[in-house]
Image 1 (cartoon, rainbow, N blue to C red):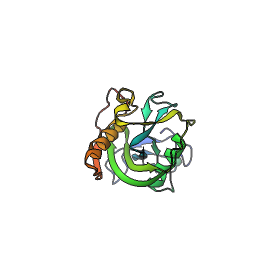
Image 2 (cartoon, rainbow, N blue to C red):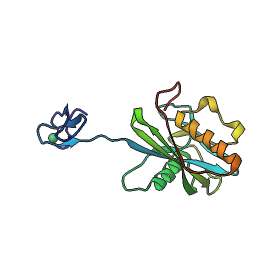
Image 3 (tube, protein in one colour):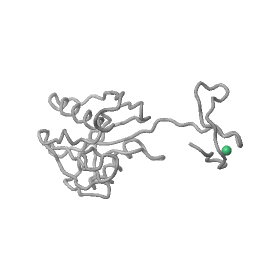
Length: 182
Ligand code: ZN
């Protein structure tokens, strides 16, 4: 951050009184601009045992496969955000959303919250964010073309749990950048 969003003057990076870390502070109007992690919400959309995935048509990781997910907006619940992102990226409507996996990705200031979900119908299509949208059986998952580590982690958890049929909520973390995206 370079300029104050309140008054437009340049900000400085300094530790405010009674705080313990540097913040962007505006010397002109006194505003303190806190920056906090963002919540990314997404779905594992399932239809007759297959998983709906989308091939990204936007950067980063254009051309790679992902599960539908994106930043939660103000004014919506986490589940509503996951449902909206799925609709935006795949054209599909999901129901029965159940929180499944929370992943801390500290180095990029994000927390992922992924939901198990069911497609309402086998209706989906490419979108402005996805060049291709299709269902994958477990043995068809393109593991070498997954966009983000968190997506691979989510899918591996899901297929592991599917053996027992028990999908208990869990948390995990990704601590360093890998060879693929975050
Ligand atoms: Zn200001």
